[in-house]
Length: 190
Image (cartoon, rainbow, N blue to C red):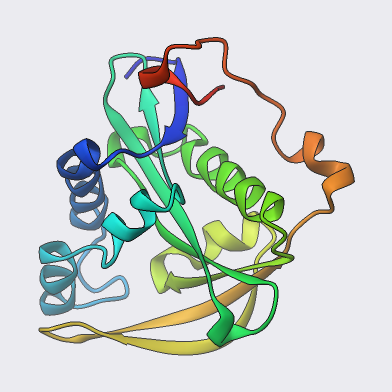
């Protein structure tokens, strides 16, 4: 994988590459840690609900390497059912070949920045048990337990919250700007 990285809003035409990245990430979760094979198979079949709506609302992002491959994904949505000023972090996945390179941290920072710019003060994530340590490193704290029902099974998760930084400290969160003005390449280069 190339070292150059572009974080950009996802396009509908990215759908298959997004699903491939998500499925590769799910396939890399060891059976029994913490989910059994049936749950992982159900999750692998349909990794994310509602991605198309997030893409249409410009709330879903992809990290693309220098070779044009999508290597990480993440998005956000307003979550009024969780309370005023709360946004829900959605569908954070990094391709297993890119684990340990900081892609998850980088794309989550971009999503947090987008939510903050839309005046959300708290980001909440429904974290798989296998991702709790990752979110803790990013400053998220456990809020509650949750269960998501799929067509084939239910997945137990932890709801985790993070207070988003004020507008005054946005530069400290994510300080990068696009150096490529072509419409199909707009995004953040990191």
